Image 1 (tube, protein in one colour):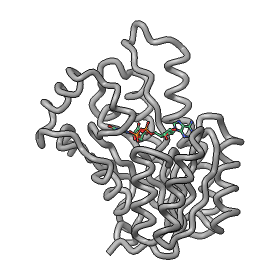
Image 2: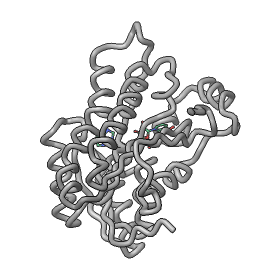
Image 3: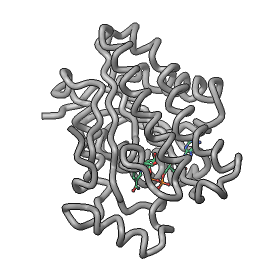
Image 4: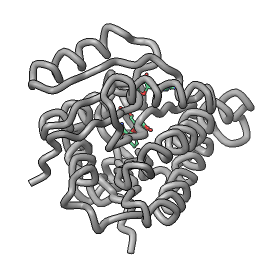
Length: 251
Ligand code: NAD
């Protein structure tokens, strides 16, 4: 099950947190992995060396996915040059800049939209040509429960993550005939650096709303990515999978 031998994956923001866990989980199932990172080369190198110790090829690619079309195209080119193909793209890179709506400034709005929505758009656009040529591909977008239910203090983040669901469904419809699937994962509260700064009261409130009653782990999310990346998920596209302890129950 879920054998990814011979596949090449590109994971954005792959040096820590969910991206790191996804990169390692894909490699654990046999994939070669290009680890995109923005600033922390040492952390990306550590992920790459773990991947190579699993017997897979790994490359680290510095690049800012929020920097627009050319930056994203350069990341994709570097991954193609190093690995020969991109069978799996995981649009994982994301940030928060929380503030109440009435206090949120343009920088906070723009940074989150640029990173969490425009980045995945340009990355998807850049991989679509090689994937269409190959007549196969897997695109996995990291949305969030916040994008499905809203979250006070996260107008920018929730809007970007909801937009990413629209991008996921449209990509799924446009590329389906070429054998490419596109799905989204919508995690709830997962312990990473991103959520480490949350006030304890906010964490407790979210856990209180979560039927399973606890936060999730990066491995819970990585397992969903492995599934979407696999051949076994060939008949699944345009879907949003909540890995969220049940905090959102969509129809
Ligand atoms: P994290 O902050 O630990 O990791 C995010 C990674 O993305 C970092 O390595 C960061 O450097 C990278 N990154 C940010 N901007 C980038 C850019 N412009 N270019 C390249 N890389 C960039 O956060 P995480 O918790 O691992 O989150 C990963 C993804 O999962 C994000 O999209 C986040 O919104 C989403 N998510 C996280 C949670 C959670 O509870 N942790 C919940 C829902 C969704």
